[in-house]
Length: 263
Image (cartoon, rainbow, N blue to C red; front, side):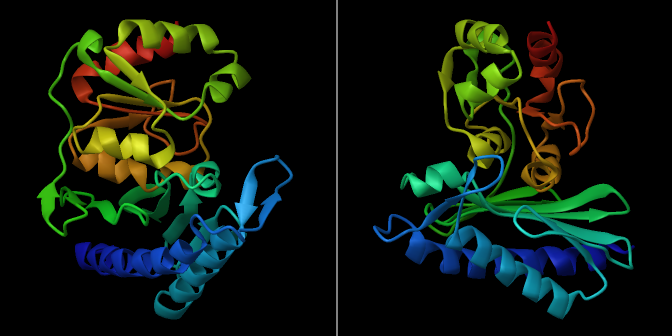
């Protein structure tokens, strides 16, 4: 694997995620949006399905040896060690309610290691992206691009804590931990899904915790948060997209946050 192979794929991912965003946006806040419920009762729309099909078709065209894992259409094995892990709309519940805090996630894995990620927010016209060893970058809605860096706040009592939903904490029998975090942080806000993790990566929040997380939710986040100087770990403290949960935070708060969810 060469650095140029990753760079070329990252450049493609930035362009392809923009095309996916252009596909998604006509459905956003549409009165005619059709919503289905999957087997796990989570919603899915034509925007989710169509955007993933668009990304899959482009991967197969430009990188035919790469594997693909997506939320809506499963896995295709690759032949060269590269795998794309995609979530066309991370935060579908936000999307169907007309809330702009949903994102398109495109993660790149090589031989089991996350190496690049793109998190694009179609309704906000923002994107955060990174490549291992190349830093993380935040392109704002005005078109300017700045280096992404996590917060330097070193006390939980001065931190902004983000979460996706209270229901997730109830599902894992962690409501007491959630309530404790709400009490011990400066402010708690339900700015969830990938948006909360990107708030951490760009220094606007200190802690984002998901009690329930799939690989397609996490793959793009790991390189972005890490290259921004932060840490992405599961509740056991391991850097993995397979842990079933996830934490993004600044390194100086890592142990404090882990203690809060492990207690």
